[in-house]
Image 1 (cartoon, rainbow, N blue to C red):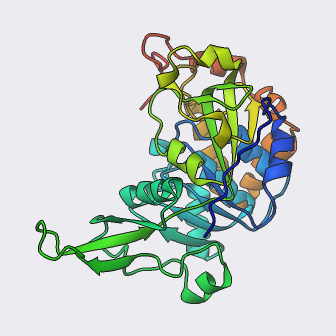
Image 2 (image 1 turned 135 degrees about the horizontal axis):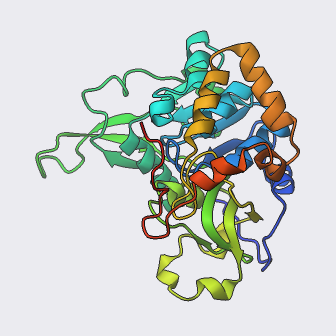
Length: 331
């Protein structure tokens, strides 16, 4: 299978977020979003996907929380592959995600956290699979979320969830069997970063999670960022850069683009918003009111943020020494 990467020679990748979503994400696309639970989810992009009422999307996520829950609840997704879906103490299992699984309104396939990382890594390396021992002795290998019929109907899906194989090197090491997990190759990966240059160079600060592998595995990459800088700004300490320009198709300057999740070094997660969201998400009617007010009632992330109490935003501002907000309600 030929590997296609976003290799635009355009030195200026800057694009408005609504335009980037319109250009790169089509109904039925296989997409991936970065972040981990309530950290650095690309929330501005999530809200734009919902505003544009994309449909029948197949989502790959590692251990995502808020972004996954809002995409599931809004009806954007038809299929989801994930290792864990939760927003910490605010929703140990994402509320709309749990409801959709219980009611059978979404098809879900699960991996272990390590399997998911390896699958993105395989996609980034251009190999069809990677071996592991993760999943041995568990039901993850025995229980498939996608049937053979579903797999055969979508050429973007592997025909098996995983393959257990005898060690091809015989008795070399004590491992007798390995699990082969298939590569993930999204049409589009969307991540949020602290800094991105106009040419597409990206710098993620703090834990990268699986964002780099997710991006390198994709055909197209959309990056939202806190700071839009020049390429020269990221040439100093270039070893801190996460993605080169040729991997990135669009750079979208969206300050607070991960809100209400955290963006290390800039702001923490917002407990007040996440608690309020959890209350909205528990019932269908209140969740629809939430969508109408915060997403469909706003035409971009700036208008969305205008609905938030400025004092809330001040409270989550990160301390430059630690990267986190001091005295934040974490109970």
